[in-house]
Image (cartoon, rainbow, N blue to C red; front, side):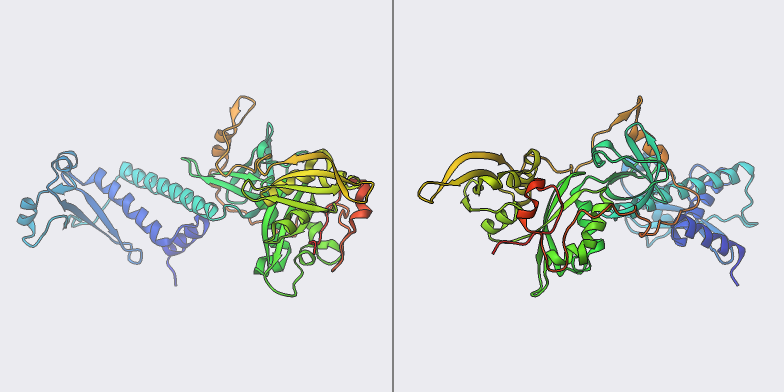
Length: 447
């Protein structure tokens, strides 16, 4: 039957997420500090070996052999010369250790100050180990989605409780136009994790393109399994995203897999993103076909490539210009970022002889026209005279009991369907001309 000590050790290990062996090492360090207070001389370097079964401890004076004059002068309790070491153990060699037992014959009985010292050492080491364990856990979850609850609002920043730690959703990482309220449940992307003296500083995001990728992995089994692959994402958070997908298995329709039956899969993703439209594009290694697909739902007449400059002139009929360009140029901007090509939209019309004639360069977009969310930690932002970074550091101090993660099905109610798509079917571009490409949907590749 486990002893009281063993039960307490197990409980602390489970609560703090720290291995038992590491806690025992903390106890040994604490006992050594207490021994140093009550028993050790200045020349001794006490090291304790603690037996968790018998609860007995043995104390050793440990010396390391060195000829480094600086170490010998600065820490004479820890280091001795080879000549001095040979007097104690003739077989000792350079860099070896000499261990001399100095356990009191009547056992160790610590006074009040020594006991208080041991307690403080253990508590300090436990906090450090807990912070390190928390940092390691969340560092391994960078660029993944976690469930969180809005804890409080600090100016324009949002502090999100993730159970064991609290992360910060800076204004630059929020979805434009999205409002947050206390106790609201959110799916957030762990963007960056940095160590601080008070615990990990965790920067969260809902505007980064990777949250779209992770949501598709959660909702589309074919993507999670690798049958369907997301090749590229271009996003203007809160408004529209374009996702280029490709099937690695013959017979699997990548767009149909992502849209789902009656659009249920993509609708769920859009609802989680606050109603953001999502266009699903078929990726192709043929630049002409991929560029044509990326400008959907517009019908493309021709694509002329300048591969040296990675620029392209795309011809569309005049009645398709609004679809190709999109509201405020959004469609062509996202297409340029998705494909990595600079795109010039050229209006064309039928001439008197039936030949196509260019009328104007209606729009131009470059891949770097809108920057992605930064891959480095954002600069410190301030609200109401106090830095959010400082507030976050104060908030992420470890809690006594870890809360359970919220179930994944506790997500916000889906918005009314904005996708008109069903299995194996795609809306016709002509039917959405009057919406100026304002409806998220799956789009087929051109043949």
